[in-house]
Image 1 (spheres, helix red, strand yellow):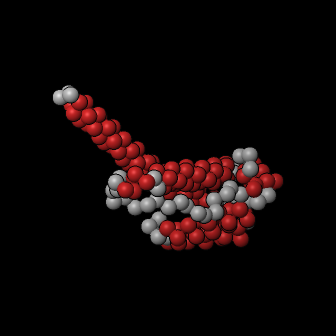
Image 2 (cartoon, helix red, strand yellow):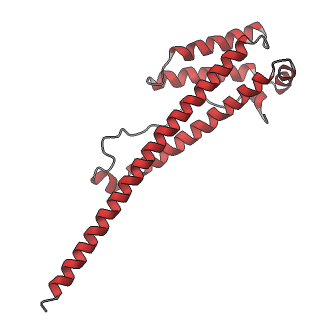
Image 3 (cartoon, helix red, strand yellow):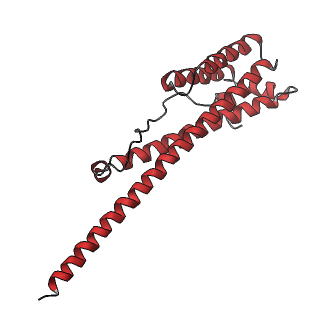
Length: 184
């Protein structure tokens, strides 16, 4: 009978160790998810910057008619005036650039003609940049949703495993590649 309390003590210690291990591994996973959100955000901003740079190059290349070049240059100028820190304004100007590119490169036949001209390969680079923005936003939003799902768990909230990290938000903006870039 003297050994009974020892068995109970060992059982309690084992359960306590398992709870500590679970909380520790959950906190580590949550930290990795937050890092994934940060890396995905940096990649998305880089993809948007690349698209902006290539769009600016296309606007100044002389491949487009003057009105289209002016529209793209104006949208790029508005993007230049925004910063990723003001996310709402940033998403709006990036969505405007997407809309302008969608209007200018809506017809696949016209895009084929532009690409066939000398220096037209820059339009293919723009198509690639537009597709990378779409992919970058998907990766970012997936990372945010996974992080938010983990943070909404009862034990994570109760034990405050998220620390002081802000709740990540998804990116809601227009990012579709123009119809003329389909299949490129």
